[in-house]
Length: 110
Image 1 (cartoon, rainbow, N blue to C red):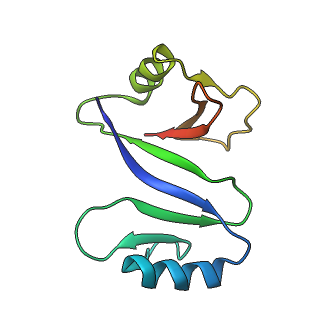
Image 2: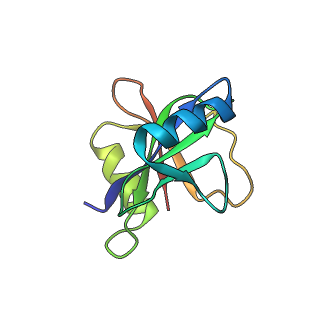
């Protein structure tokens, strides 16, 4: 298996308030690349992405040393996931949006 839980995308109505709460609650800091991405200050852990428009979902990151985006998507489809066909992807997207058998949306990210 070549996936890890890389991030949880958390829908919030107020990025600033959410960021302050979750930074203190989890001991995280804002990512230098994007202040809406909260990262652990010590050691590896799942990131928390704050977003005002996206729904809450899991981001599964592909371990590129053992797998590829395509092979993981195929594996997950074999387990019962389906592609979300009506998703609008940005140019050069490095992810695929899938739905678990129960309809839960998640992303597989290269």
